Image 1 (tube, rainbow, N blue to C red):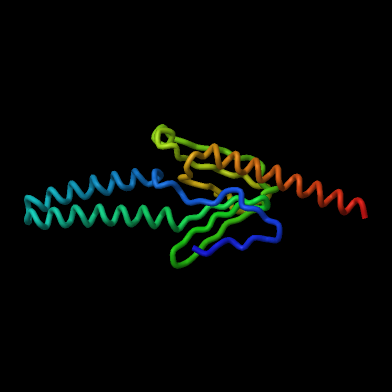
Image 2: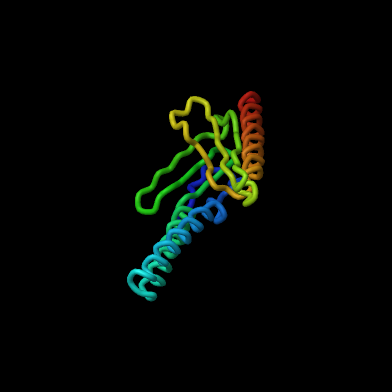
Length: 167
């Protein structure tokens, strides 16, 4: 993936991908479907066909999970939040850190056990209502990173105001 172009003085607070644990359910479903189809083909066609189809379905599930994870990138800087998605085509969502009004985390029971979750950002005046870091490892750490980014942005704004006021 291409690196993030930082503005002068911009600092990266958090940079990552969804956790591998966030796609475990995909792997389990793939194994289940592969097992069912493989057993059916084991008895209906041949043992070899059943095993090959089972392994192929598991391989497709693992590849899909890998692509889902590696081609999504979440970045928090002291100036903005950014989500980049895509393999061939690319979609980038970003908003200024000072526009973030509320940060909400969501975790199901399974997510809590796996220590993954979603961090949902409400932003001022944003047309894009779905600004979510989904499947992140330890979502409370992402919330702490946003707090840190907002604190740094506030300090930078205070220094800029003091400099401009002193002229």
